[in-house]
Length: 543
Image (cartoon, rainbow, N blue to C red; front, top):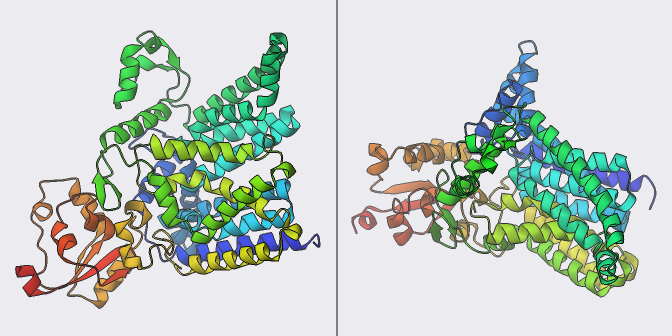
């Protein structure tokens, strides 16, 4: 391959992704969570890291920089644009492009330039990456920091040296400012070390060479101390050194898990926590929401609602329905191909760095995490899977024409499937759900309706002024005040068009409000896949 072809193709794919992002962000209204994340980012820039809600992280200060820049400009169209909250989305878009480059880079270093381009193509046409890589939220930031941190950890363990160790430590620390799911990088890195050096560990233990084993542990502890100290410093800096070293006993905890730990260990209650107060406070707050189900309605899967506890295997089903079929087939082929050709690879030195995090997050999210409100939480593993898929084309010339043709057809199918949802990517479902009006029967919440289609719903209302439209954001506000007359006694139309967003229809916030509609009607249409349209007749209403 000509030395210029690879870089040009990388630039072309990233440019295509940028174009899709630029054309689609104009269609999406702000999602329910974006103003909250943006507000916290602006608050960080103003020197205040105190929490007003859980889940917000300092990384969104990058999104709020657009507004800060706008304030420094003279009055004009550019200033007006930058002062608007949606302008902050461009920072997430640029970060998603950076993540795409590292998907290519890691795959190329493992399997060659062709494989790197293959992995980048999977990333470029990943509907959930596109959907959330344009928003002022933390999901793609988390996916990116997991990928970058693990990539440099791989390079560090492969090559050694303080420079790579320090780079890895810094990235690991920065990841803690992106999303709390990144906290699992610490046990993941430990598991990777065990897997990476397992043969040596077994050999030393069998020989009872404990002195030699101590020699292995010495550098491990040395670098572990570096990682921990750098993380503590960066987390404190990210949260503006807001009350570090507060004793655990002085924390006003919310979750039963941490309150129980606090009560069972009074001695530890006197130990100062070297982390900023808002960091542990947000972690505890999120745990409380997971325990109680407060603040996000019910979880939903296959027509069932649960306020707490969640569904075992939720993210397996979300992946099955919300990732392209072609991508899933390519994953299966990559696994089979890798097993058959395993002698060509060095799993412990390379693929373990991809596989261990994917397995860890798959087990944790499906069986231990109790906040199941969208596939976006699983995005931390998707780029690593796409990199691994590069192994499928690492031996392209020797794979045979049938395999090559199958891969080309699957890639074409992938692109067609993803582009068929343009410009609405949050509600993407693959062709297992053939009738897109029926996607609500499988999943809801941020998988379909996250408030992003409010603009299209208002446009529909303008064209059909007699239609009854219940806006999703209004509904969320009324849900918080159970005494509101309209919430308790809604005035539904006797006949005509009734437009309801998916989350309201399936009962995320109130299971009984639309039960009559679910029991008696099927939608006749949709608005941007997130709102369902029903035609109500007077005779049916009376009945």
